[in-house]
Picture 1 (tube, helix red, strand yellow):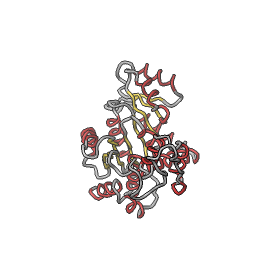
Picture 2 (tube, one colour):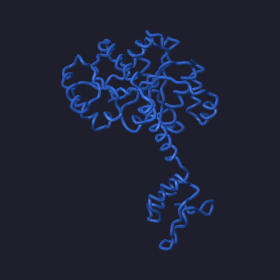
Picture 3 (cartoon, rainbow, N blue to C red):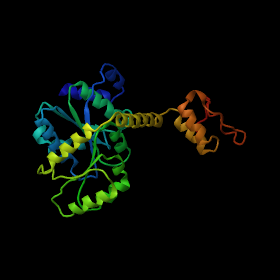
Picture 4 (cartoon, rainbow, N blue to C red):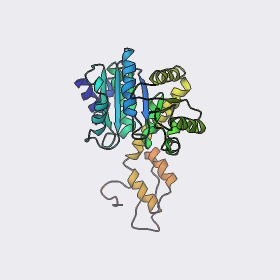
Length: 299
């Protein structure tokens, strides 16, 4: 377990390429879980872990913490909820902090999954907080992606507004023993044609149906769907690389000052060897955007 932790730390560091270079591409199943805070994602992961361990599968849990690589908040919370699995040598629980990690979530998670596959885990349960770009990045590596919601509180409408329904494969109304569960199911059916299941994760009610829905979705996977996920993953990784491109800030200042149009700047990022020239006739304070070295202006 300690060796696994060290390897996962390495792929979240500048030494990622060294680790990945010696790993084979081993297939591994990944189930993504997302949804609004407080929906019961961690509790759902705990009962799913129990179900898959009963089938003899080695399970790894990656809990995405989008805030800080130092707080350990997500990891602490998940360990409390998954107390039954802490001492199980065939269950690994790991927090992945996106801020400060090399390349962010788009790069850190696929690398971690590849390490876990190399360590002979059979299944990865990938949890995120349910907001922002991270959901698209998780959907790119997970099959299926489960969106967990609570009854009431307008979760169905909020999920639609947040774009969660666009990346979901299966919708789960957790805490379905509470008032408003039936209405939540009806609202979701009105918003989407995706499967909608009910669950009381704290009691395990509806767990068998959820596992079967996940398995049915996996059995229905196709080459086209895998290729679509791969395209999304490639684009997400490429976008991450472009956000840290050394020319981006300089080109952005050129666009901001009207010396370069955004189309040419975008082409420059994709083909850096063909950096576009910026006319300086109207503003002698600026020079050619392709200027490099110590004489370049401090934009």
